[in-house]
Length: 305
Ligand code: ATP
Image (tube, rainbow, N blue to C red; front, top):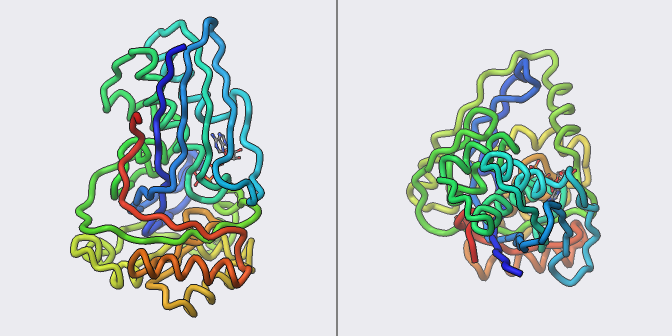
C-alpha cells in the first residue's frame, strides 16, 4: 500500500489582538504567528475502497493525560481530506494516522495543524497536484489557523487569522510550553472575552510596532517584553491557577511568558537552549503544569517527509 507522511508544526501567537465580534460570529484578529518545532505527523495510506478513516496515536511517554480526539468526520484531518477530494473529484479513500505531540485543546492549533498536514499528505497520495494557492483556499475554509500551518515560519495574520503574510524575523527563539492537564474550549474563552468587554466598545486590533522591531532585529529580550494576548485575561479568569506558571517563569528569569492562543498552554521565552532546559526543569519541579516541553521556532509549515 502506498503511503505519504506530512509533518506539521504547532503555532503560537506572539501577539493576539482581538476586535469586536463580527456579524458572522468571528472576531477580527491582528496577530503574529510563529510555527514551533513541536510537531504532529499525519500518515496517509492508500485503501481499496472510498472510505476516509482516521486514528490517533499519542507521541511521547504517555504520562500526560490527553483529551480524546474525534475518530470520525469531525476530525479536522478527515474534513481536510474530504474537502480536497471534493475539490478535485477524487474517487479514492484514505486511511489517516495522526501521531500527536501537539497538546489537544491547548491553544496551539493542533486540530488545524492536522488539517494542514492531511491536505499535504493526501495531495501527494492522490496526485491532485494542487497549487499552494489552491491548498490555501481549501485551508481557509477549514479553519482560521489552517492557512498559517501550511505557510509556517513567522507571519502576520489578519481577517479572522486566515489572511497570512510573511513578516521579517531574524534568529531562532527558544520556548518552553507549560502544558495543562485539561484543555480549554476556544469558544468558551472567546465567550468570556465578550463578557469582559460587554460595556466597552472594542477598537480594531493592531500588531504592536515594538513586536515587529524585536523580530526584525532578532532581539529575544525585546520580544519577551513585547508579547501580548487579548485572550490572556479571559483564559486566566477561567483558569486562575495558570498565574502560578507566570510566577515560576519569573523566578526562572524567563524573558517573557504568555498564554498561548486561547490557552491553557503558557509559552515561556528563554534566552537560549540551555536556559530553556533550566526553565523546563524548574516548571516541572514546581508542579504548576502537567508537562513542560521545549521547542524552538520559526519552523517550516506542513511538508512531506
Ligand atoms: P485552537 O488553538 O485552534 O483554538 P486548540 O489547539 O486549543 O485549538 P485543538 O487541539 O485544535 O485545540 O482541538 C480543538 C477541538 O478540535 C477539540 O474539541 C477537538 O476535539 C477537535 N479536533 C478535531 N480534529 C482534531 C485533531 N485532529 N486533533 C485535535 N483536536 C481535534
